[in-house]
Image (cartoon, rainbow, N blue to C red; front, side, top):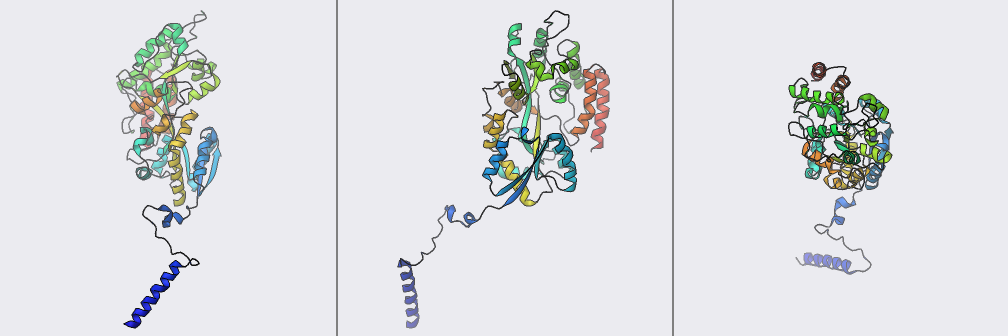
Length: 443
């Protein structure tokens, strides 16, 4: 017993001396609760990853400041950029997808991405979103690439909705009250009749109250739905062109030129397009996509114009078409690349990056805080016409995996209706047959 006590005492003395010695090493301190600097995780270096980002349209579409911001905040992620003009990129990407060599992340039209999801090309992001994003911080457009089964195949690169743009001076000169958010389509057309004029007395109209269009977003889609009609049903699997309400909306749209309210396609060709016809004072109102404002402000900086929410339809309901390009993660990418790609998506959706997008004027952000950073000094001053319009009644253009195919089948028929080559009644029969065939072939 005594021998054991002696050994224990000696050991305790040695420990005591070691602790008091100024020349010896200090014992390791215990990490205190909440002291991250002492945690094992703190000593780990960030995982080194490589990310290949595809940029169709290059920096003409995606702000370089956002890419640079991501690189600065993520020095552990080596970024490789693949830039190409939009058309070249879209052609090339199909071959790369087939060969498994596509970028880890890129963006394209939202409908194309839905098709990628159906084919197993795009990663389902619903789990990522649920885990890492607070959905109440974003507008509903965050889910533009959500399929009918709840999977989310992309996040928005930007939202491009439409609103009613109007030339203030033309309204004032004609003594017509400015549009309000309570306007209906009929109110808009009543004002447009008063604003349509033959200003040089040659017997032909050279100033129009409203600039219609034969394109989908600002033309036939909203007008087909203006009287409660539909293009596709809720399942996006059945064409609805022959529905009486759809036909009625198409008739009203087709009569805009005949009634002297809107110019025809030849007029637009001479004017340089619908936005140039508006900006040069030849058209008093038109449905303007948000991105057009950047073009108008650059080429016509002195134009006194503004926007208001697109009018309510004849059924009393507002409908605001919006176009979205979305980022997707390549489903065949390596696990580390997918992790890096999601880090990029989270940064792109952050207030910092979305504010850059908001100030660019190229598209609307989906981050609600960034939405408050829109440049209200640049025209149109009433940018809430777009953001409030989306919040109230934003819709995509009946996008589904076969959207590009059925849209291309529908477009020439609508163009012929607008040009008077087909009656609306004849046109809807062709639309119903051709679009339904595409939908059936893609079930």
